[in-house]
Length: 125
Image (cartoon, rainbow, N blue to C red):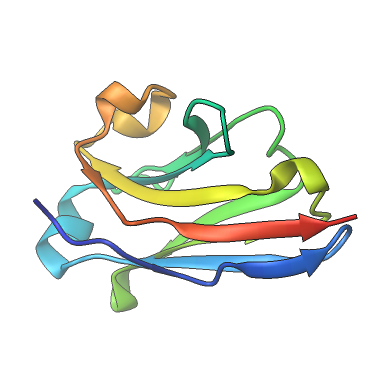
């Protein structure tokens, strides 16, 4: 099991912004596509965004397009999720995940191998 360390969650008002960070071991980060999922109370875990390790191509859920941006910093072994124009319905635990090259195109939880512990994002109205 690979340890993924997430940070950056918190409480923010609607319309505000947050940036989530996820740091992985060097070997994992270099060899893995990285992504974010989220899970709200009583709901299934859902795909948010993912980024390729080799091309930095990205994939977003429809609700994330235009508001969220995923990026990766190779020097810091860190993937970021910049979230703008947050809405109350974005409230959830956000999980960092990693998997094989090419996985970024998948929106299924079954594709991803490693998971962080999650960070809570709460958006107040």
